[in-house]
Image (cartoon, rainbow, N blue to C red; front, side):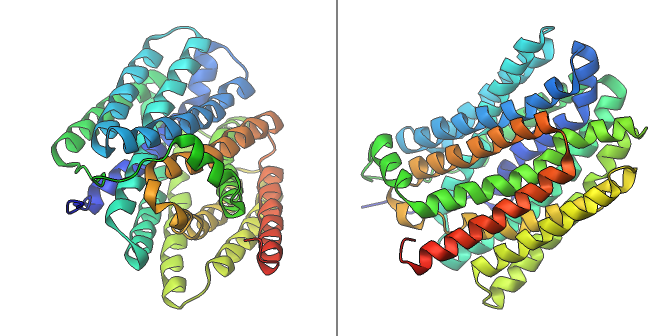
Length: 384
């Protein structure tokens, strides 16, 4: 008989979920410092973002599988330790290749904040309560860019990227202590553990999983392209790193409003597909606005609609994604994360090479609308 599963506290769940995005957005203002310190090009500096997400994808698989084998709690603690050691290595190295390796290992460790936390949440919460928790988390994630960009820009202006990594180590050490004291073990007892290959085989054949993975990837690429490309836009326009950091406020406002509106739409019984369609249309508007304003520093204002669409779409895409995989949530969550983080990493790699923010956002909006249309057509034929 399974033991009673203790629910993770919402504050701890929120802190763990926010952790990877705070880390990523702390690094974003430091891009110009990295470029100047290692004497590399803008494109090379921006590639660290794509490496972060690709390494994050493999971390999601590793830690998600570890959740099912050694448990949710030890996996989370080990991942935070890996992050701390990798951040210290990245801070100390003087070679850009080694820096990228260390930063990739940081992402590998940070993945516990996503996959392990989502697994713990799905262990303890179900149905409407689960959707409500994901909405709270969506709102909280909206605050992450403000925290990360403000801290990152302030530290970069005083001490460059190395100060940013020192702060990352301190924050993660505090998170590790909090988890050690308060994180519950929620892994059910006596649960059948299918092999990762068998779970992967089922998910690869599941068209809904592909739909969710591609859609989550598209919305993330649109948002995180701003973090990887905009610092160089502002630099060319003569704006300071602190100005870029302060733009996090308007992005956070958009994401928070999106999550709040999402909760209201769900209470009004608006379907998930209609909400995601509305989010895609908002992203299209954002791309047009960025295109019109790209030659002045105010190009960041329309990006609020990208953040708003992100806050609307993500909870509706993720909350029910693994309903058919409740018997192996750790492995299924890991594989789902692998799928969409690889999409994000590859997409950001191409975005960094392309370097045209308005066209990237417009392209993501068009892709999301096409995927929605295909999803609807296949569902009408009974293939979803």
